[in-house]
Image (cartoon, rainbow, N blue to C red; front, side):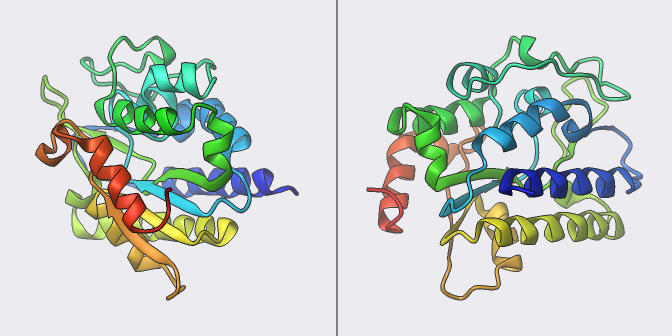
Length: 241
């Protein structure tokens, strides 16, 4: 089995393991590895390149990003226009009425993804060139939305302890296997939470483990000069020219 095939099969196993978990969370849980699997598989098969030396890790899907498109930080315009991916997306079993999954027809931009892919596309106009040396994943494949009208994004670190630990065990195992497959020289969290998860599973003391500022518009640090700050950090780490 080739590299992409092994990664896809390992991701199928992640999907099955996550589907086998149970949660007491009184809200909506979206798993794009189920209803948007075709898009996620296409992303892995086209852009996961053996030997990529820098692994970026996000936290979990956002309601207007990966929850819609199945792609990490999957702002719809970047997914369609930069990555060239546009496949039908299904529906979760239950939807928040204020956050329907519309797939590539979603009319709202995802702020974090717009910033992240915007910077990447400026520096690497051809995505295949970027992915020769980089890969991008999320730590947790599940999106959590509360039942209120605003469908606030509930992050998995706030789950009850036993449920959180069961989910983290599955996600840690997948992350270890992904790192083993790529064997990158650098693990970069998109935000401090992701950096901590990378540090917890890293078993190579010679590997760089660090983070960039999370690009969310809800993060005050990201709302002024995020491109410049991120580029400078990656240069300081010796990873970008």
